[in-house]
Length: 397
Image (cartoon, rainbow, N blue to C red; front, side, top):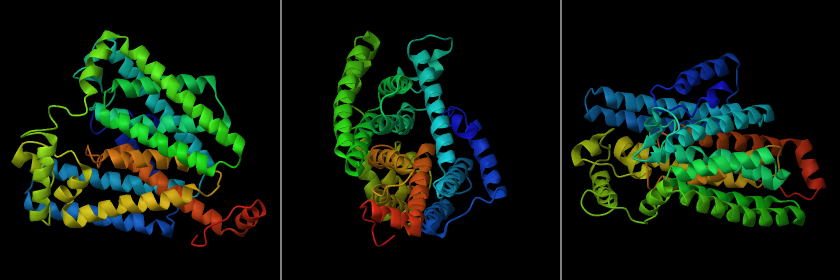
């Protein structure tokens, strides 16, 4: 609980969350948290990805920041595997702890963002980045996506268990925080993740009554979100920034030195360097970033690491969508995590997400809960119960 509650404190490195992650890892080892052999693909692909990154270091010399970059990749890859192990038994107590602590972390960050944007405390500028809310993060483009998983947990809860006043207040607060990040990538990420979550909820709903509730709440949510945007844009400072950020193409996207120009350069460098360039080398040589995590995978980790990273993402998408359709006690947790992961995968085309802590949390959750689902389906009592109520289970599991 403490480790996840402090996960939003990310404006210093190493953060308190990073230190606690090592404590949590040691406690997992001491507590003999099991490693299910069905997690081997996750482990192998992660190792290959990291191995590609370590091989690329040979050509960039002994630079402290590049070694630190590789160390961060190893740490995050290990964190993803650890989370998969923690949740591969479908432990609802652990999932409940994760939900409460992540919501607390998101609310802490959002509160800091409001205090900064409206200049309510001394030193408010520490929570802003060029008038955009970065809250307790270094970058608004990381802060915004961090809020999406807890938002989905709350929204899925409304659609499956009904509305709660406290939950509505939290959703409104988090939506406002997401909006004030003025991150176009985060906005699109949330829209895509919400569509995926609603579609999956509709597909797995057991009766017409729940489907009707999902449709009504979706329409209501869109209406409320529109009202929230209208209310926020009535504030002059918000409206001015929105008019700038709402443009589909920004000045830094096009022309020499723009995002798309760097991506063209990145593609040629990928083809010319099978072993990659190593961390920060593309930026050092060309003076900017390509802002595409999949290009980043090949540029930094070489063809080997880049292929492993893309394979890991694709395999996660495939196994997750199959598992989320199977009724379990943890189905809605998996659904929210999978929907958030899909949005994060899509956002990777416009920003580098390979060092986002919450990306590896979602990765571990999808793998862990998928393994828990497979194990549940293999239990005779589950298969008998499923067949009794007319649920068809895939033969492969």
